[in-house]
Length: 313
Image 1 (cartoon, rainbow, N blue to C red):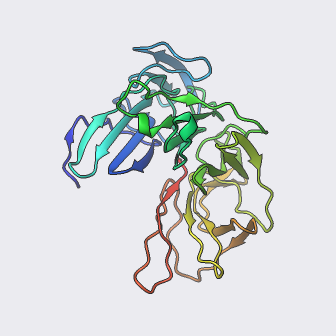
Image 2 (cartoon, helix red, strand yellow; image 1 turned 135 degrees about the vertical axis):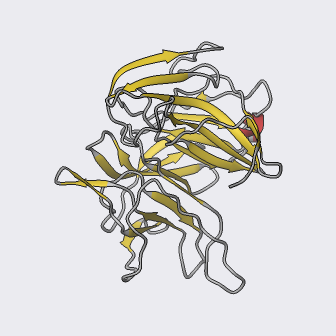
Image 3 (tube, one colour; image 1 turned 180 degrees about the horizontal axis):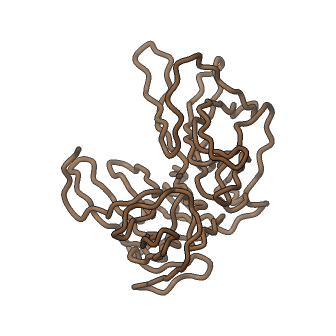
């Protein structure tokens, strides 16, 4: 366990995190509100309240400052809180700081956060974090909006969340999906759930440069519908190996029962083809809400480079 300084965020689950430079960020999620952390199903709640402080919300975005919360009274009688706050951890000094931004998105859990290294000099846009989906209301209604924050503006008056208007048919609203950067301006959204019983296995491309959604048609048999899986980009090694997504685990439903697939799939980004990887008899126990990370290869090895992310549960 690492000893940290500063104002640490409250305990939470189903939040998102990302790294930019020497700083680790966490945003949103669900707190137990004094009654323990909630499960990750995004189920119904019997009542909903909302409190705001600070600036008024922007049209279509919702929320005010980072202190906005949504309080839920869940079926088990415990008070649970959805959050929209943003914290950073300096990984050199291990000091927590709450980051204040304008027009915070609606409090949510089970969403995704993806950093795109795009730089649009003419528009003054730098590396950007992209939030998609998640559950926001007490009734467990998922979202399909795209909200962005220019990481280069943090600490200035220009630090503001923006809802992006996009062309093309958007994905169905969902939570527990994965969203993986495949270039400096685009990402792939895979799977997730629309409710506690309806799961997805579709694939959508978001191009933030063109401001456009596109459903991806692929060859091969895809993974079964699921949420809470983990997806990572493994860089290619031309001409021998194309870049690919690797998808593992999650939770699905079969015959009205939750099941935990322990399969491993790849998605070839060049040929747009799904393949199941046979790993023999040695494999991790079934799980959801986990992460995958690509480990840089040893000298002379055949590993990948970079890092990965997972879908919220």
